[in-house]
Length: 246
Image (cartoon, rainbow, N blue to C red; front, side, top):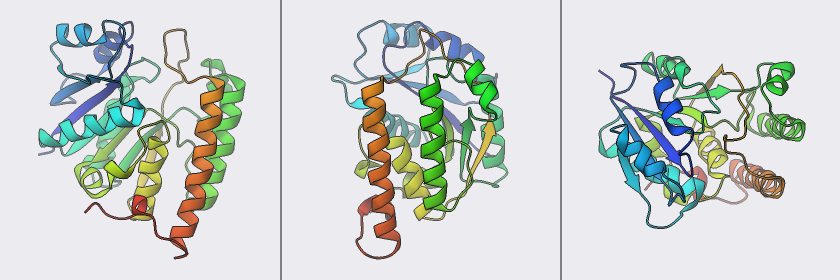
């Protein structure tokens, strides 16, 4: 029997955490963990009021650093399937079962909730045009380099098997936003299978989103990551990012 644990890497999610949690289907998860990355609002108070296991960072570790804590805590609780949901209500948590089912059936090792089923849906959901274009361009580059055909790599709604999270060298990954891509590229390097399912797009004032300058840094980080992957793949230089943990 699989043990499903949902993790929420939270930062200033006071206004959206409860809505995200309430959207999760009943009985799909054995436990929900919120990791508060030294928020400046009442995120932790809301999480505790909901009765969720709440882990507090004494200082801000960054988005990637937050996820590392999320996965460590989930693995400590013997989770066999770990679902990561941004607690900003941008992703439809009611579709959690759609991410979990293919992992239970052992059809995939990682599942992604893709916001890019069609251009019109993405833009109608409020995704800024420049973010949509950047998403498509970067996803095209990643598909080309990795030999995949995923519609989106940049989602904050994803699920992993325990094997993936115990095999990948998580501590070698960035504490910043590029963590999301490092974990996927490393998984591809180690031959794990990635699937996806469409999810609605919801951009609104309270939903978290990095600004333009951080988006540029994120994009450049992905291009650098792709260069490292090619060097590693063709044996020109070995990077620990793409090798098994330990």
